[in-house]
Length: 208
Image (cartoon, rainbow, N blue to C red; front, side):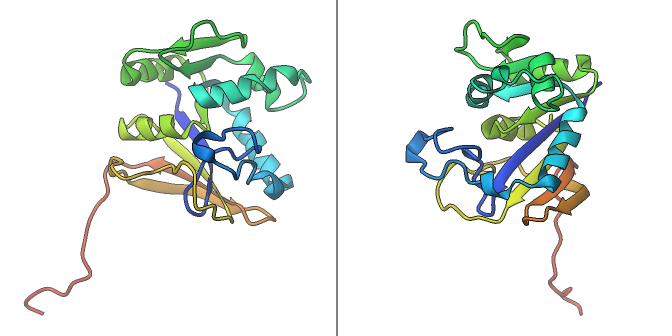
């Protein structure tokens, strides 16, 4: 059974919208697209390559799929560690409206999200990876289906944009499994989901 692994870029204030370019996603009047670009370095590239080396298939939300499918099919270098896998491995896009996707190897996932994704995990050899797709990740964390979260936090605050975890998210605990800081200050931290949070108190006992 494969693991469901999410890799997400977020700002210090939790925004995940449009990290890659100004026109990537201007929904809601978002004017800060491309906020991650200037933080790229060898440390960052090395980690991303490591992630894609473990991919067995990809699961994407509709918006991220459209962004990826407009770019990666045009990158045809077989030695490119990202393009070769995105173009060559199975891709599943969660959508109730997408009809006939043109990107080779794409299957549309509809119906019961929990059942469909659990089945995809069962038949994926290697990691079933989600890149971006924050709303989908949030739903799958709430359903208890995400195994690992790679959270890349960039040293920038934007003030507006889609946040990863919002009011009403299902309380979830995570176990830290590793991390590093890039030369440009990006905090790369990996977590496995660990059930529900535990609670305690710093208050002194009444009989103390």
